[in-house]
Each structure stands twice: as structure tokens, then as C-alpha cells.
Length: 342
Ligand code: SAM
Image (tube, rainbow, N blue to C red; front, side):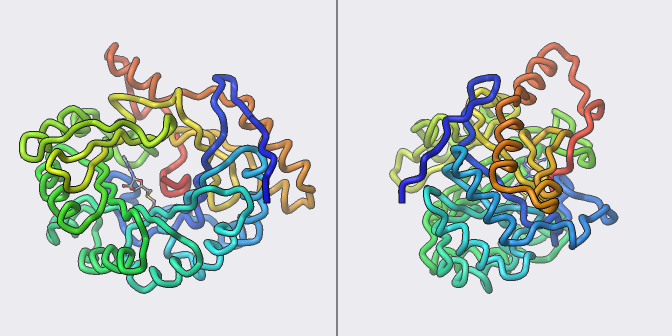
């Protein structure tokens, strides 16, 4: 069935094409750069959107222009029965792409059900393939499970299987080549992510961020690359092909080469709040409206109004402030990544 999509634009002319849905704020890892806290005010279970509520909202987002949905968290595989949500989303009329971002610790047991439900591709977050370092970075001893999860994704036909690695200086910048080799050897796509100042708990300092140029230089010295560009103009990663023909790599350079101007992403938190930017402290409560009995038109109007007034360009402003020496990450409160969904 054809879906009549609106051409909804924000104040900077950006269309709303992607929706990232956090299905839980819980995570079984404690990565220092994301959610290092042991104590956290977790969202009450009764406040978490049901699969039916998520599907209803997703259908409305598609009507308003969304073409791609990514399921994330917290750790999405902690959400019981996630494959049932995947099946509902995969069958939405007009949705062109559905993906999932996971730490893969539970993937080996879930990959078959997810594939059967209609999940065709997957992004796995993995910052090192060394067991000891994995343990110190995630504070969990799960590397073997993650590696099994990656294999299970491939065995169940997911394609591509992407690996996302956040690189921090002095932590895992010496793992870059090993991650490249691991990915090339196994047919995974590797994407490096510049360490970002998300949330308020990771004590981000720019010195710890390894810029895209440096990541590429290190890879190129061993495995020469050539740029092939972004998948489309709103894709966060710039992609590269290895000149020997084996595989590809990408870098998401949100700090040194911000892409706010091409940002087409909206985010829905596990408790039904609509957030425009990864670095935002503002949200718009869709769950409250929905649970008060609002009809689809009222929900559409709330979403339309939130997107059409969007004006954030946080990463561009951060770069301007960093260049003039005025950037103070702690001065700005943000929603934690674990609540927001990466
Ligand atoms: N638990 C899932 C996972 O591990 O993929 C999904 C949620 S996680 C918040 C999503 C992504 O955000 C992961 O790839 C993670 O590495 C990334 N991320 C978290 N904190 C980050 C930071 N400070 N800078 C860059 N990326 C970050």
C-alpha cells in the first residue's frame, strides 16, 4: 500500500526521515563513556511504552515522513519479546528500513527470532576484541557472548552486520587496527565513532576524543582506503573502501565534522517522550497525550508542531565553541544517552 507522506520540515529546512526508538532505559553493561552509574533513576515499568503504543506512534511518524526506524535503548534485547515489536514494525506500510542497535550480549539466543520477525540488518557496539579490555570498558565479562551474537546475526542472514566502535584516546585507540582486521576477516562492516559529550555522567574531555582524521590516518597506513562518501546525505557515517577490495570502514565524526545540517532524526524515549537531538534537555510528552485518550490527529499535530519548530544544531555550536576555546561540556544539562537511546 502506498503511504501519503507529509513533507514536514523544521525551521532549518530539515525533513523528518528517521526515528530512533528506545525500548528500555535498562542496560546490562556499564560503559564508562555512556552510563557508568550503578545507581540511576530507572523509568518505572508502568511508564514504559507498550509494543502497541510504540507501533501506533511509529505508524503516525511514517505518515509524517519517517522512512527508517532504528530500535535501540538502553539495551534493547533486555526488553522481553522484542521480536514481537520487530514483527509489528517490519510490517508497517511505507517503512523502508528497520534496524537494531545492540551490545549483542544476548544476540546469540535472539538472532533467529529477530530475523524471522523481519529484521534484516543489525548494528553491534563493540569497542575492543581483547577480553581484558572489554571487561574494564564495559565492567562485564561478556566478550565471548558478543562474538557469538555477531556470528549468529550473520548465520541468520542479517546483512550488513555493522560493528560500531567508540574510540577514546588512551583507552582503546590502540585497538583500531585489530577491530579493522577482525571486521575484514569476518565480513562485518566497521564504523568508528568519535567519542561524544553525551549525557552528564561521562566527564567528557576533548583530549580523549580521537578525531576522524587521526582514525583514518592510522587505518590508511596499514590498509589503504578510498572515500566512497555517505550512504545518503543524512547518513552520519562517511564510508571508505579498502583498496585491496576486502570490506569497508566508516567514521561518524559528530565532533570534528558535525552533520546537524543534514540531521533527519527524531528520537522516542522508552517512556514516550519525543526528543529532537542527542544532546537535548527538552522533550515533548507523547505518552501522556496518548494515555489521556488523544486520537491520532491530536498525536500527529503534537509531533508536527515539535518537528516544525525544531532549531537545534548542537554539534555545530559545540565545534564553534571548541574552536574559540569557550566550550564547557558540564555547563549544559542533557538527557542521559541511556534514557534517550543512542
Ligand atoms: N545498548 C545498545 C548498544 O550498546 O548498542 C544501544 C544503546 S547505546 C547508547 C548506542 C550507541 O551509543 C552505542 O554504539 C554506543 O557505543 C554509543 N555511545 C554511547 N555513549 C557514547 C559516547 N559518549 N560517544 C559516542 N558514542 C556513544
